[in-house]
Length: 144
Image 1 (cartoon, one colour):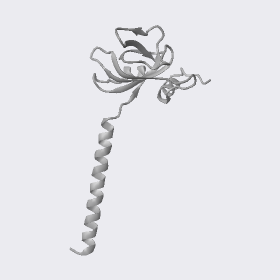
Image 2: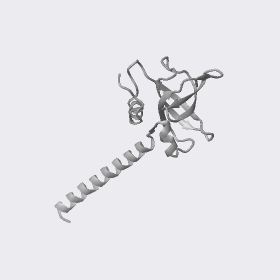
Image 3: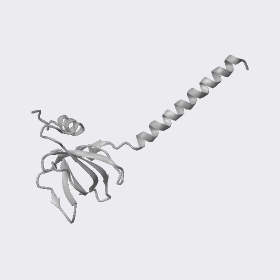
Image 4: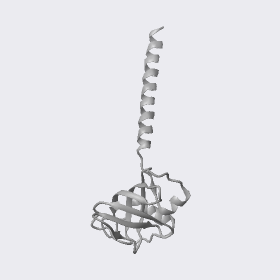
């Protein structure tokens, strides 16, 4: 082998190694991604029980029920469909009915969403971008 061929071999091997490392990194990051769904999206897409997702929309009026200890149940709606949610923990101070919310967790086998985190809007003009985009797409969002 000539010097030039050895150099090209080392460069090609290095590029192959970097490509493989990048591919594995992106694959691993893709496995940890939690996707965002509106309640209407869940009607068309099958989300298996136990898969972590983010669910967003508005807290449906009249559905907030405080249970034993810190357990709270409520429904997240996009005015077309609603999904029952159970959360065991301390809710954000600004959590209330008819406000934007994003919950993260997974579905139980009975179809109830078990949230392990709840994010509420932080002032009177803020709505999480994903929730606002979903509501705008359905014609339910009105700009102030």
